[in-house]
Amino acid sequence: MASTPTSQPSQKQNRIGLTVIEYKGGKTTLCAGCGHNAISERIIDAMYEMGVKPERVAKLSGIGCSSKSPAYFMSRSHSFNAVHGRMPSVATGTVLANHNLIALGVSGDGDTASIGIGQFVHLMRRNLPIIYIIEDNGVYGLTKGQFSATADLGSKLKTGVINDLPPIDTCSLAIELGASFVGRSFSGDKKQLLTMLKAAIAHKGTVMLDVISPCVTFNDHDGSTKSYKYMKDHDEPLQEINLIPAFEDIEVEYDPGTTIDVTMHDGSRMRLRKLNEDYDPTDRIRAISMLMEAHEKGEALTGVFYIDPKKPTFMDMLNMTDQPLATLPPEVTRPPRAVLDEVMESLK
Ligand SMILES: Cc1ncc(C[n+]2csc(CCOP(=O)(O)OP(=O)(O)O)c2C)c(N)n1
Ligand code: SF4
Ligand SMILES: [Mg+2]
Picture 1 (cartoon, rainbow, N blue to C red):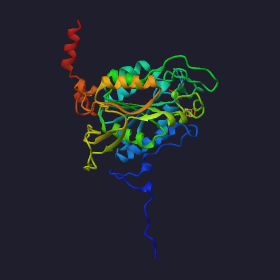
Picture 2: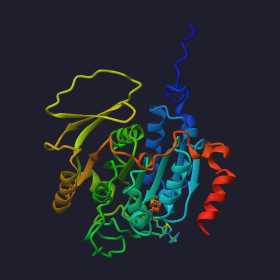
Picture 3: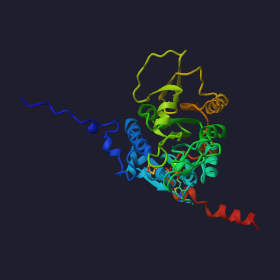
Picture 4: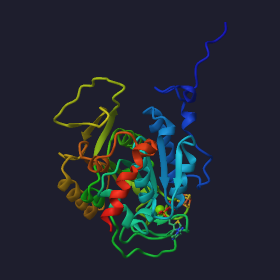
């Protein structure tokens, strides 16, 4: 008897009729086992599961091993590899020109917190619609493993050099400055990272995700606080996170005493089951103090630290046209002769 052919998981179509293969990119040139490769895999899964059209995504990055990684996922999307630390301004221009695109920024801890800190802080205070991921390994991987500004005080390089400067916590900074969805995850925690990325796609505003992503070549030894072993031993998830996408429309029972339900911009629901304490991720001040407390205790907290799904975005503040600027016809964007004459007259 002939057997019924079963379809391979890789051939299963998502809600827009695409298979996961259509979300893949070029073959990675990063080291085998690099955390950045795992993050690329989760981005592919999240975009596929949420049914995002690859052509709607603009991948933006700076310089570093992390910033190379957009070449290794979603080949069908738009892509721009900017100058070191300058991705935020290119991303801002991209979103201003065409707000129908989903901006996905991939940066490193060096690209963001060292050379790019000036651009990063201004991006965070605008609440531009963007998913901004820091692939955080505590070192400049591409230039052979010098400490970055997120390396913890007292952590040790392979050469034995000790870091004697305090780290910049990009999550506290992003919350303080105005990002509307801030969290931290670990490249080795498949489920948590995938769910946070799916929630990021459902959010409108700046999503800042700091993902601890071990550099197996330069920062995965004893004495590092960004190694696989350190994260496995110290990772303290704040919540158990689930996302119920708007298109799935399922009702699931939950206990409001132990669970917080956040309705996202697109109608999806993020369900956060508290694991540690009575933590409210809509309280900004509490979020910052909790991050400082965790830091004092040497805990590597992960989870959604802060979310405000209703905060006006940069586009709302600018009162932008519904139709993206990039697609407006010249008759609309070009001032008529009489208006130009009036401007010239006013300058005399
Ligand atoms: C203007 C400029 N300064 C310095 C460099 C050298 N450089 C290239 S990548 C990099 C740091 C990358 O670190 P990070 O962003 O953490 O990425 P990783 O390689 O660790 O993923 C530096 C300093 C450069 N390319 N351009
Ligand atoms: S040097 Fe480090 S960060 Fe760069 S690809 Fe290798 S493991 Fe990844
Ligand atoms: Mg780095």
